Length: 393
Image (cartoon, rainbow, N blue to C red; front, side, top):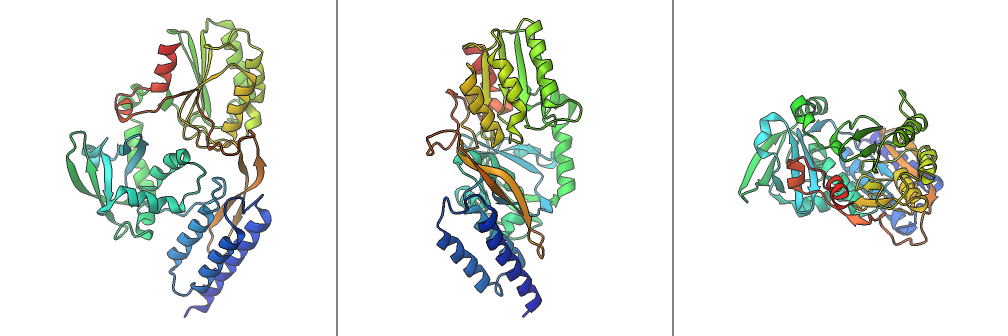
């Protein structure tokens, strides 16, 4: 028996239990304190029989049961399958693949290592911190390529490769062995595909300039300013305040029929950065009218971005288009971090409660007009939200 190893884990687990109860704004808003402490006690009592990776997995599951998307644990990943997935209305599909696996592009995944995707989803979501199903759909596909997690959850037999079963557009089923790569090599191979100049040129606006926190483009036809707001943070080159003042000036000096603010991929940051812009829009006789101002939201609209959405709804004539937000309107946030000194795991936790609406049962900020991207939209590089706004108004 490795007493030192066991003692270190017990020390970390005790520290986690104590610190989360002390520092989280309201740790037991979703589950009972008794259940949380029982899970802690069970983990401690069985520390000898659990391997290190099993302990880490159980801590991840414990944190996920809090059901606060800001309170989470990120498990270290060293190996990845060179694939990216997206959860469309009818299933999870491959959207990016290393050239070696190009023939499974846009195929639906139906099994992993012979295990039905429904069970895979159920097992994976046990380690994901989420508050609504919309946010789960944004996060779970990012976990699927992490073969170490699949292995730890008994969804893969080893970390070198895994068998994935796909269904193509003709309903043909095939099983393929996908080899894992180092994190760096996998990211490089996927980056080559996504940054190909020919590929980039044909992308819709919503899938361009993803590395920029914010940017805008003027479309002479149909006289639209498209403002992509990806992160609620200042860029070194031009902070949000200065950027938005330039944007407002541009709108006032040009023929602009519509302003589209796209926040569908905004995971948050500092909500106050956009307040001066919202105030300017509020007083803009040119833009602040029904049919002139639109906000696109989606499954990745989260945290501070949801606060911005509520402010836009309250103060402007904005029409909201897209999917329900991944962020819950009334939620815990303002995260801090604690690190377990022996194992090195870092846990984020919430220190503040944000109440944006009296209806606490509201899981998402809802669009006025729900619009969901389909696989065919994605393949044809069409943004259905943008098309809806342009064609309907």
